[in-house]
Amino acid sequence: MNSSSNNDCSSNSNSTSSHLNSHGTASCASDRRDLGSHFLELARLESAWAPADEGEESPTELNTINSSGGFLVVSTDKLSVRYTTVNLHGHDVGVVQANRPAPVRRYAYFFEIYVKNKGEKGQIGIGFTSENFKMRRQPGWEPNSCGYHGDDGFLYHGQGKGEAFGPTYTTGDRVGAGINYATQEFFFTKNETLVGRVYKDMKGPLFPTVSVHSQNEEIEVNFGQESFAFDIKAYEAQERMRQQATIEKISLPPNISYGIVRSYLLHYGYEDTLSSFDMASKSTIPPISLDQENGFDEQEILYALNQRKTLRQLIQNGEIDAAFGKLHDWYPQVVQDEKSATCFLLHCQKFIELVRVGALEEAIKYGRVELRRFFGMVGCFKDLVQDCVSLLAYEHPKESFVGYLLEETQREVVADTVNAMILATNPSAKYFQGCLHSYLERLLRQLTACCLERRSLNGDQGEAFDLHRVLHNSKMRG
Image 1 (tube, helix red, strand yellow):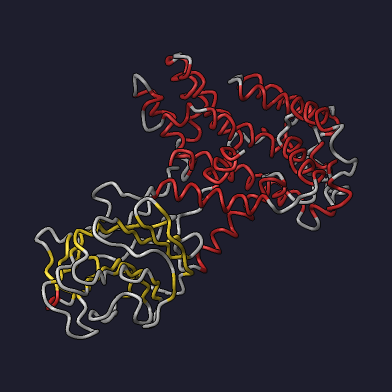
Image 2 (image 1 turned 180 degrees about the vertical axis):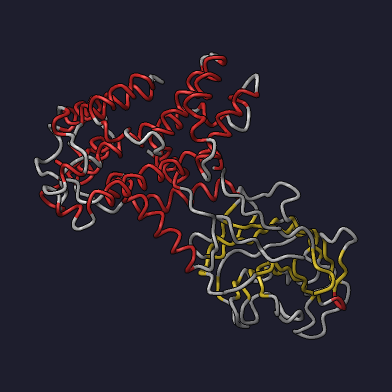
């Protein structure tokens, strides 16, 4: 598409009434500034991004204060329990909770016991209880508790009557209890084997709990200070795959997935990849386009495809001067405001490219001329300028805290900015925000929102949603 079709907003105000409505040229320019600001903030997020550390304290020992102390003895390291008396009544239970509740902001929590001595009757229990649990009862005998018992292999889930669940356990066995926050289930193990699972209908903090109930019963508790008999990491991996398999059973017409991927390539100007993709899909995809079935306007993102491809290639190759030249020739309105976020990001990237190739003196000269005008600005402008200049202070800048600027992702942010700004010059564009994200990305944003909402409904239990991990798991499965 030639430059004659790339007029600025004011010259197109009559032909784009559906987009500008009554806002006029000033609103158009303002919307474009908002687009540039979005990517400027994204550039700064690259420096701050790190995997979410929702560090919670985990249980480390038994709570000797909150226990039925008259019937048991806790070792000095607070990691083993022995029943010391004779069981005369049903409520003469030696029960003790961990010193902290199970952490909830993770995929699963797990702990184990080792049965050192089954004692007279082997009435040992393991499970979870609430903070106000009666400390004279086996876990599972009272509401807001759940326990797997060794003498009968029954599961007790809030009432005195249990149900058949798994094998009994005795001296020498290692038995585990866990919470799967993704499925909201308790699960129990014996040695290396998963025994079973049950729905977790309990709310609030839950404490790992163990019990002994007949003479000479003795157990040791492992809160993770030693390796578990049960492979909890393998369990989590299998559970993720099980969830992914369920998702993959949902059928999606191939022409829909084809259209979504194609729209992504169109949106970002990957013209060559698009041609290869179309060629590879020609014989396998029904000739039904995404726009016919879903109101998708392909013409809107076909706009200036060749020019956008060229500019993306120049930026990703570090040829910023050439990109500036093309923009001045093809889309002068994008770079007419020298203090815009778009121009700022391009100038920053030019400075970064000079540092990348070791042209430090040239970088300093360039910074004094082109970055100087941004020194007095606030917010993301100020932060990014400071990070750029900081590159000069390090002999090996890529290994420094501002090394993110030398990553390929930084070039991609700048290329995406220019791509969005060009899309925004399209007279047929319905709304500027549509220039920010492809249809595929909008679906992924919706997925993220749904996962966050589900976690919120579960009381913020479970690991924080990480789209990169979800996509990685899907790739590994494939």
